Structure formats: C-alpha cells, structure tokens
Amino acid sequence: MLTISRLNQFYGESHTLWDLDIEVPAGQCTCVMGRNGVGKTTLMQCIMGLLPLRGGDMRFDGAEIARLSAERRAELGIGYVPQGRQIFPLLTVQENLEIGLPARRAGKRHNGKDQVPDFIFALFPVLKDMLGRRGGDLSGGQQQQLAIGRALVLDPKLLILDEPTEGIQPNIVHEIGDIIRHLIDDLGLTVLLVEQKLPFARRVADRFVILDRGRLMASGPMPELTDELVRQYLTV
Image 1 (tube, one colour):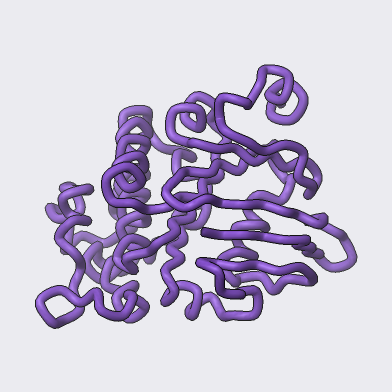
Image 2: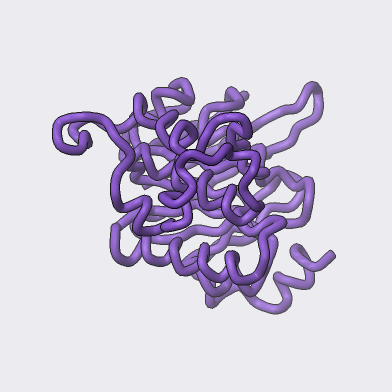
C-alpha cells in the first residue's frame, strides 16, 4: 500500500534519514522500532506531508504523493495520530471529532451528510458519554482514544499511530492493542505503528522495521525479530 524509496531528510545541515527503502503492505500492521532519536517520528511526519522530503519517492496505492500537502494526503486516506496525541484541549470531544469531517473521503457521508461515524462510538463508548466535555479534561487514556477516533473520522485506508501507548495506563494499552487488531482483521485497515514497548509490538504487529541513526537496519515479519536484533538496536 505504501512504498518508500531512497527517502532522505535533513534537519538543518544534519542528515537525519538516509536512503530509506520501506514497504508497508496492505491489511497488516507494520511497526517502526528503534531507540529514541533515531528518526521514527521524523519518518512519520514525512509520510504525512508535515515535513518536505529532501530526496526520494513515496507511493500510496500506486500514486506518487511525495509532493502532496498533508491535507491532500488525508483526503486520499492517510490518518495520523501524532506522538503526544495533540488533541485540542479547549474544544469538546464532539468538536475534536468533527474537525476531521471536511477531509473525509468522497462518498463516505452518512445518510447523505457529514457526521461522526457510529462505529467510532462502538470502538470507544467512553467518547459518546463525554461528547460535551472538553478534551483537556479527559484522562491520558481517554485523550488517546479521542485522538484515534479523530483520525478514524477520515475513514482512512492507512492509519499512522506514533507511540499510542506512551503515558497510558496498562488496561487502556491492552484495549488499544485489541482495537488495532480489530481495525486490521475485521475492517481491513492498514496500520503503521511507532512503538517502544516490545511486548505490545510483538502482540499487535505483523511486520517490523528497525531504524538506527536514520538508517534502515532490519525489517521483516515479526517472528523474525530476534533477541540479537533486540539487544543490538532496541535495548537501552
């Protein structure tokens, strides 16, 4: 579904991503892994169009997207949940969810009009109970559910999740893992996940990609993530 070829990125004069070749197959969860500061979030921002590429190609469903705006990529079906959630704390839950409606893919209106799809409240019942509450008043776990729900309003084909378990209580972490697998196995979504928690990544992801100092070091099916790779690239 997503093919990245020879991707390069710089931060000032510092070369942050080096000639990355990454394939994200449709209908699976691909987990990008690596220690802090190796370029994982930078890669997600490049995919979403929040950072311009300094070199390379990027294709989504066969179409070149490297020069498209973030808004256009959202319209094509790429949803993004950034690290730290970045919900709007002074807006209500309802208003946070409705922000994504203008970018909802064509032909996906509900009963002839734009409204938050019912399946989001089936996934996250707590959001329906808190529609009038401000986003900033929610717990960390509830905010993460709101951030994922806001991305799902777009009806994405590809859902990018940047460290969705960060700062979340264990019971919500487990619930988020179940929801990710439901989105893939039952609804046919493709998920690109950034995750530091190894047990969560092994449970949820089908494939892994390891970055180190902006370079691709290893990739493959999750069962091929060996203890040696973990010690070399993932252990602090």
